[in-house]
Length: 381
Image 1 (tube, rainbow, N blue to C red):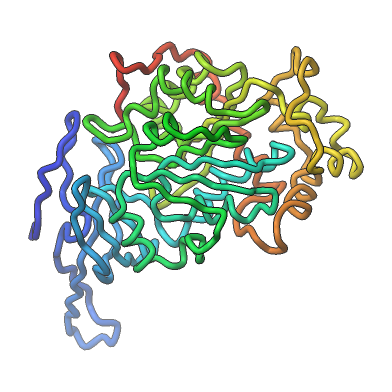
Image 2: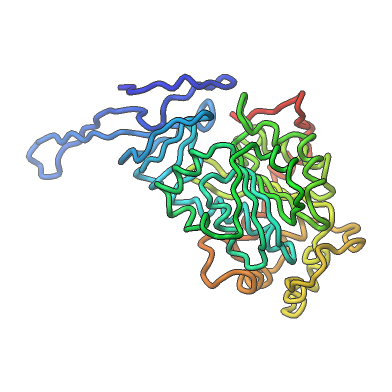
């Protein structure tokens, strides 16, 4: 029984409501041998991953279902992934693996930078990205821009596990406006810019944040030695071509170094892609061999450390340097810069998993030619 139909369409894809998608009964013989048939009924959440692939899990409860001027906002409890945020029929975050997504988005860039003080977050309505950034004692100020206040308010009310009280931290300022507009209007310059925005879907509100024009503008809002990181859509062997590779190539039109990485986010039905970009090679990456010693790592993380290695980055492959960072160096950075037991997912071994992008995808990224612009958008399915 299709209980509800959502008439939201982009490209060739039409979404059915993932909140009340399908109700049906399955039958099974009782194990008592009496011949009695037990009937089991359940609501199911369904979401298309590709035109040929569907993700489905049981629905235990609907916690919230509201509409803002921008989108439909639903918080539900699923059998497989726990409490989940769904916007316009697309899963945004689930309790089971949100730490994997958010820690992967935030901490590699934050730890590579020697002294991140000012941070900008585009999107991030669950406040989990802010939660992770604010774990860093070096941070003086976080400016977050999300266009939809109702998303933030709904998450604050129904998803406290995500924000962990981050909205009470005096270092955090939230502006409910378009992220590009906020970046243009603020006089601040940032050490780290993190884009935790909606996917680049047709007619979506975040399309302009994936273009060549935007990435070149972002450079003017970064401080010397600053890093930019963005979620970049699905990055699995079967769907990297949707937008991950195009975002990677587009970033190269603005930044000297662009490093792709991936994380398995099961609730999205796919491995997920990210891109980290910067012009000045961070000191930690410019001399990875020296960074293996405790003293070198400590020097790279002191408040007085320079943000970049300047001319020392000539000929250095940033991607290879990130992959080759010793496990002990990453673990020591975490221990030095973050409170004890602050992370659930990211550590030195996990770092190698993130940046060890599979060979077929690395080759695909190298061969990609699409550059996203305002006149030539690329849409995710």
